[in-house]
Image (cartoon, rainbow, N blue to C red):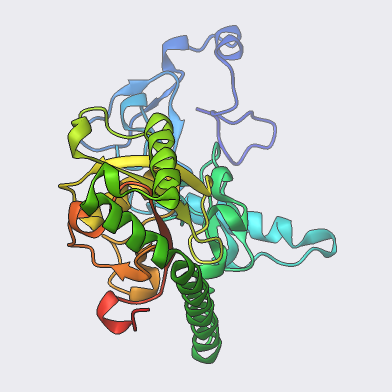
Length: 326
């Protein structure tokens, strides 16, 4: 091995096998012993750990592989270097909390890991969260309903009040719509009880609409036809943004409202976190237009609804017992 005190000598590490052979040195001496104590294997292509600066064989080259005493030191230096690099040229310095690390996308239903070299992630300045490319736009992650991370309590309270006001306003609009349909709902119930001979002009029109609905509605084909309830389903625009705003579906009359809600939300692509949040402002509810009320999650569809009815999904309006029915 060359002496470090002689400036004319080439260092051991940088000297090639060909150069050593030319000087009469045994080529088998090129390489280094793995410095992981249990190993000590001679490796001709050793690896240097950038955290502890020790040399290891291919089997122990990773920090976990040799129980690195300074695990993570290299990653920390790289992050600090990236921050310094980003601050050059008049750009705003990158703060530690702005750096993306490997973590799940902040959209609740997404399982994508962001903060990697392949999926860097996108930071939303409105809600101060990080998302994958699919959910980077505000409307794709329901940004308006999310309080900004780190926001002050007063700001959070103001935002929550705005969300509650919006939900209440949406509910009032639906109640007005429901009031206009309530008589039609009563007529359809009376006609159903009276049989075919009791149908008036309105009843005949309703019957035609239901027959048309049965031809276009989508649902689980395993549900027997005699058990099906055919419904018009919509998502309220302000509180329950959907990729598909409305649709025609059928469900089993034996299902409860909660199960129907889950199925309808999936079909309309509405974010549904009812099973993951205890906050009422996060919960989706089902408004029965003809009945003019919010349905309880445990109600049976066959009892609460009839084919041809319209239900609307909306968020943050409160439980049925907290609301005044029309």
